[in-house]
Length: 143
Image 1: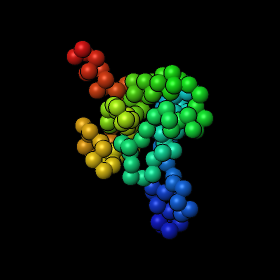
Image 2: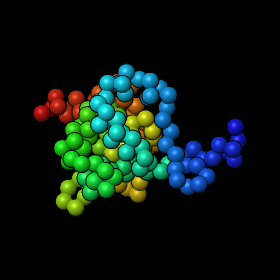
Image 3: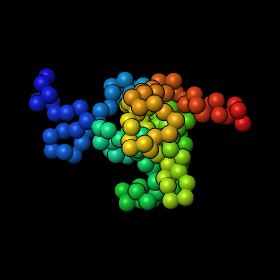
């Protein structure tokens, strides 16, 4: 199919964007075992992706509250579950007046204006296939 017919990989013609959801992800056992709230947060993060900003996705309460989320604790639980099961990785540690940033592991990590810390641009981690985040396991063993 030509580019003209299918639009660009990172967005459709009307400019609203398009997030690819690989069939392998949708049918994987690791996706099916996620809680519904974790699946909802994964969709929120996928909705923020604009083709060149994987690594600059946020689950900040100020953003999610405007999108209809009702509890910080629910967001934190879903965030922890996605990190633990390898669907997302933290690309920047937040702090005072600075939010945590995340990348989807089924897409290549983008440069994002230097915001990404600790990952190579263009790297696709695919931790979701493992069912866990090997970085988290290493950090837990070191502690």
